Image (cartoon, rainbow, N blue to C red; front, side, top):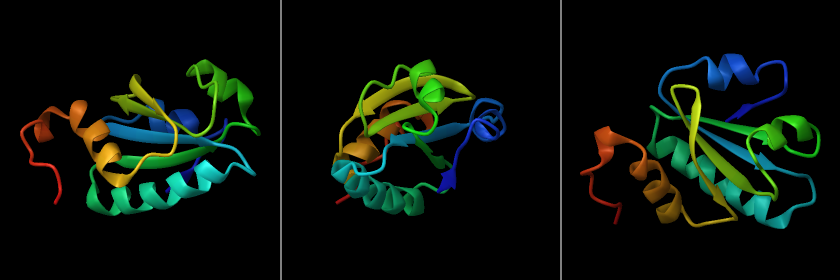
Length: 113
């Protein structure tokens, strides 16, 4: 997963075509640590999606720009534009469903067993 900052956010996320999922997290957040492990699994299963993390406590202006009010929050980008968000630590099947909702190429894909 790519670690984001103010300096690289545009290059990695908003200036890049395709799907990107940004995990906004904060230190000391237990659910954030759980979600991070889930997203590492999702990243292996979805190599065409860019997975990145952004410390919302270190970059609150970036988080605020995408209406992140709590951590963990995932924001899904398509071609640099935010298209969906999901709040909370969720299991892998929920992350996969979240990605399928916004990926027309995988719209007919069967959920993982």
